[in-house]
Image 1: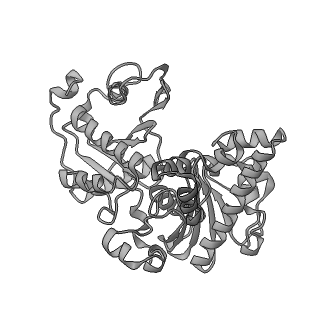
Image 2: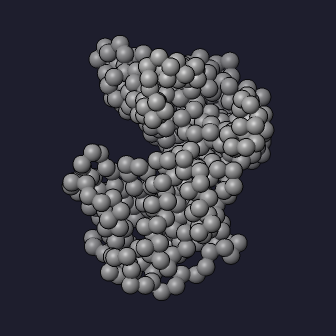
Image 3: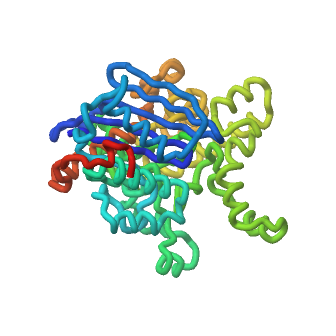
Length: 421
C-alpha cells in the first residue's frame, strides 16, 4: 500500500511517500520519496529526494503556493526523483491536521462533513488548520482518485481526565463554547511513547512516560499506560512552555493591562505572543535555539537569559508532568531541539535528580536518535527519539485500511494528467 503523507504549514509544505504492507510492523522505514517547500518572504526553497539518493534542490522567487506544491508532487512520477510510474499507484493520502476540536479525535476518512468540522475549529488554530484544508483541497484537484485521511494532533489527548482539561474559569465557557484544554503534538507524543516501550523491551501498560516535544513549538505530555493524562499546550498551541517565537503561558492580567494602557487590540496581542515572543522575544537574536546558543557562547547576556528561562520552564514542566503521573519511568526528548541539542537536554535534567534522572555526559554529547542517554544507575531512563510524524500518519492510514475504511484506488482523471483543475 503506497501512502502519500502531507504536513501542511503556513510557511512550509512537507510530503513523503511510504510503502507499507497490511501487516507492517511499527518500526519506521525510510520513505520512498520526500519533498519539502519552505517559504520565507519572497523566497522559495525546494528540496526533493528519493530512496535511491536522487535529489532536486532549487531556490526561486515565491509564487502561488498551491501551484508550487502541485509541481513538487508531480516529481513523484516525473523526472529524476520519480518513485512511481503514475499517480494511480497512490492508495491513500494522509494529512496532519493540528486541531480536531471535540468531534474529530481519531484518524478519519475525509468527507465534506469532516472538512466542515475542521473548518469550524480553524479559528482556534487558524494558520495550521487552514493550511491543512488547503492541502486536502489540493489533493482533491490533483489526485481526485485518492481517498484522503485526516490524522489529528489533538486526538491522542482525548484521554485527558476532566480535571486536566477543564479550565478554572466560568464553567459555562466550557459548556457553551467548548473552551477547554485540547493539547497538541499528539501524533508525535503517541509515537514516542510506543517507541520508548519498544526500545526498552517493556509493555507500555507498565510505564509512566514524560515526552518532551521540543521544536519551534514545544509541549510536554504525561503518558500513563500509553494514554495521555496531562499536557502543557491547551485550548490553542500557545499555552505551556516557552517556544521559538511563542510566549507559552503568561499571566492573563498582562494582556488585560496591555489592552487597557497601551491600546493594543486582540490582533496585535496575538501577533506579539505568537511571533515576537519566546526565544526570539527575549534574546533579540533568533527563535532558533542553535542561534541563541551561538550568541550565548559569544557572551550575549540576553541570549543567556533566553536559554535560562527556557530551561527553567522546561524543568518545572517535566516535574509537573511527573506529579500528574505519580512518578516517572521514562523521560523522552524529541523533535528539533530535543533530538539535536545536548546542551538543552543536559540543562533540563540538571536539577531533576529528585526524580532519579541522571544523564551520562558522554552518551548525551554524542547521542543520535534513537538512543539512551541516561547513566547506568539512573532509575529513570532518558531517551532521545527521532520525531516520526509522517510515519505515524502512514500507519494510521494502514489501520483504516485494515478495517475496510479505504476504498481501492480508481483510475485517475484528466486533472492530474494536465496539472489543471
